[in-house]
Length: 602
Ligand code: M6R
Image (tube, rainbow, N blue to C red; front, side, top):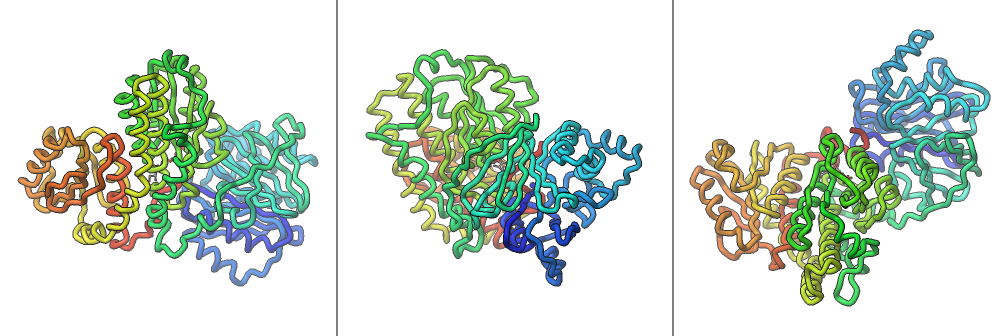
């Protein structure tokens, strides 16, 4: 998704903007650009393609400026091109903007402006904002901004510079994230924390429709009634070092290897006297009234949600449903005061997930979110939030966010089962003991990375792969196949193993790769039958299992753990498999094509 960076201070703005943009590359983009004010003039430099193209254009550009805005664009309206890249200028070249989000009524606004004599040069929805600002321009630029945004429908994070106010930078957001970092006498504005971590950990969060006016040495906030707002500085706990590769070839590999510590960090302070101790205000009385739990998320987080559903039903005995946020929000789910909604999101900014949260609250449900990014929109709007302390996840393919989400789910389910007296303290303690053993067990799997690397060598030329499993193993098959397709571009599909015979088995032929996850003891005989059926049709199987039996063509054995928690171990070899296959294919796997790290538009 698009990324935003802005700077005002004493350093040379183009350098800061380029550095910031390079930290935003992981979000996914197809063009980039900057606008700076120098000698009372706005200079815009932008380029299609990777940031290197923009850097090339800036190489001989010696413009010195202390104020500027920058953008990485992920095309929505109009193809990736120099013209569609941000920043966009108003027709009279007085105002420049960068925009994240989508202006849903841009066509009608464009027609309106065209009737007033405005001409547009790009295909973007964003250009109308620059011209709207020009159209409503008055001496008090805060009025101009408020008039403009009162006409906009949709989501936006906006940075604006204005030739008539050459010492100011204006920032505003609605439903798209924007943070402002402060370090002595300089300000760094960004759509995402890693972009500014190098310079500061002190940040302000902007609320919807709040405007920030920044000058060197001063910052003022206003609400949409133009009243001044006093804001507190929040401190980011992430270290800049964590947002660097530290010798790993890719962020994804680094993040896979960070999982033992990320899981440890997520659980250690939440276990007291051998029992879960999450700081949440759910009482036994409240839980006894609850008759339905929805777990809502997208992508990888949804796969963690499926695990939550399964464990809630098994250990707490409450009816639970895992839902894809983009479906949930439009299917009129039956929600009332007796519904608890659990939202899962690494970024805390996924547009569909945020909309699902709001829908749930509107209908009277209580919302708990499990989120990685502190202060994100989902975290702020939930009734309760439990953070996964995974640190920044930079690679587009989610790995440590998933395993830390599972860790929180394990603690949460055990805590709620205990609270509702579905399990006794003794059982809870023995389950927690198992949870505490997870980091070491992940570590031991990672030590065997070369086995997976070897297996990956046989499959990286393949065009298709199938992943199968039953119960919780099926959810990990889904996660494994998502990992493979998103970074290796190999067509991969996951099936409930029992469903194969109902159609998909027709696609199995000589040497088709089938990855089977089988870690649930009572389902093992069924899985073995499914594996034999497909091998009989020529498939090569890779079996991820805790059984010592040689089940498939290739076998990877995970350490022993209580069956409720095998998912957090079986997923690790599948992350590695996807990684090595993509790496053999020489894919830029931290930034896979067409994908964005945080999906902040619908
Ligand atoms: O930030 P979120 O957890 O809400 O993101 C959800 C999905 O967009 C994300 O998990 C996506 O599927 C990943 N690329 C998967 O690796």
